[in-house]
Image (cartoon, rainbow, N blue to C red; front, top):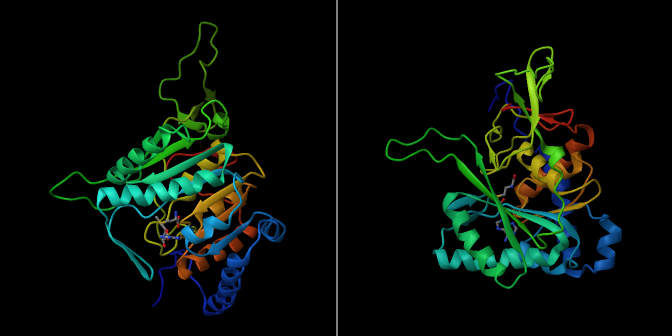
Length: 318
Ligand SMILES: C[S@@+](CC[C@H](N)C(=O)[O-])C[C@H]1O[C@@H](n2cnc3c(N)ncnc32)[C@H](O)[C@@H]1O
């Protein structure tokens, strides 16, 4: 079928499918036999694997990741390529998340940060899970980011669900990376006050706008979900925007740090890590998404742009 000229959705050519497909098999075999030292030398910490998280995670050495971004299946029935994720009881989902989170905590460095994505109901279960782990002093929940994502047409019977939540967890409340200056937000100044000497009161006059750089809050409404005219868009049903993850990566890691993305889908955190000069490690079990992640990572060799983040500044919704 012909695509509209401004449809920039990433797709796989037959040739790419064949090439990536040959890789999957060899990488999967290696995971089963991988020894820690081989892993370090072979991939230098940057690779995305096509495997099951629960199997793969066991092969990783402890305390290697500076930042972990978990975007697991939410507790909703949803089709992910060849696999249907079926909504569980609250108890079962909490058990599932407990396995995911404890597995990831082992991989996280003592001064590392972990973010966990969910919708309004799922994140409540995730929070309960984290609070249980917190009782043993193994981690601390220190924030909840709410992203107003603006998707869908809404409902006649209920409020349209515009919320995604991201829980922020650290291992050590007194020692974790937070680069507040790297994620300041450019805000247009509507009332350009001056002090008694006529100087701008904490704002900058630019050619086309007056603005102030402010520290970011935990409510984010400057990010859209990827859609078909955006160059990062794929057919993945729940792909996260690069701009969203750029904020997490810039705030909670430094250059050359290792970002781990289990449940990586099309590899958004890995792609952002690469664009922002971090190392990455991802795992996704669906071949289709894994291949899309490979393609996006290849594209990032030549194009390091992140839509909505230009010259070190996060712009309003774009
Ligand atoms: C919410 S999506 C993540 C999307 C991703 N953030 C992106 O931007 O493309 C969750 C992903 O986890 C994958 N998944 C589910 N169970 C898995 C498992 N046990 N091991 C590895 N991946 C799994 C699904 O196939 C799906 O792509």
